[in-house]
Image (cartoon, rainbow, N blue to C red; front, side, top):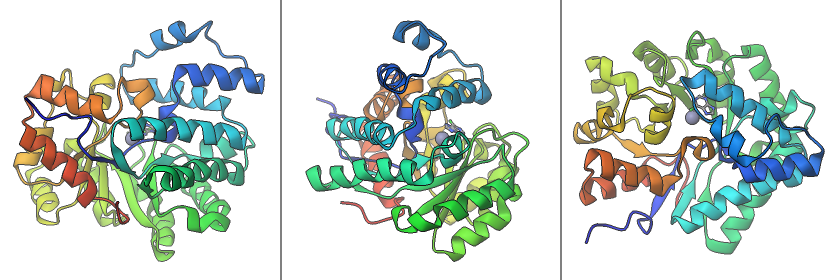
Length: 318
Ligand code: ES4
Ligand code: ZN
């Protein structure tokens, strides 16, 4: 008998809450809020989930997020994701949220953070989930806008533990956000950043050396730079790798080409994550199962990957 990957205790460190918005909830919230969606039904929406790259996906992801308006919507979104975590024995989560996607539409920071944290606190009380929330800046917008977002989040400082950087990577290097990350770090926020998903290895170096990140999101293009691999191994900088995401966004043609197990065997602190599970075809268990089916991941490798998810956490885990 092989290891039960659903029962395996897991920790998820790379999940965008807006990317956990399942089509049926998107339709329910659209109706509740009187918003028209450009799709007739769940099936035609799902049919649009055919991406050639990160930007293709982001265009749909930002459109989908427009159904989120009320505190209750953010609560329902987060609650639905955490219900999946419970069903898959994911006992620790460090989710991202993108405040600018909402505040730029007139939704208040209090509404966004209030709904998300209500669901997180409830899961902690109900079944012992441990968590740390991460506020992400949108890198296609300016550093000034990121600074204003950090200002707007200050009244809610106790509700998040980290700052991150996401959205369109190419042409928006980490160094663009040097000052806002320095300010966040001074406030005790732990810095992470997406780097080396579509962008070059130099973006991973910048995330480490200019933003001071304690963990790299994706980071898979580090394989192109042996000196960078050595740095990541020496400092045991965790990489939050997202296998199904990388296939859906065509970072790799097939999972058979994915370097995750090579990186693990090379001694890097790699973890498995779902990224945007509603859009990419699976949550944590499905990502682990795909690695077994397509790459021949052994039970021992699965256990090491799962343990890395706890070792690489920003905050204490249960
Ligand atoms: C994202 Cl896969 C990915 N990459 C960058 N930014 C994102 N936001 C949501 N998913
Ligand atoms: Zn991501």
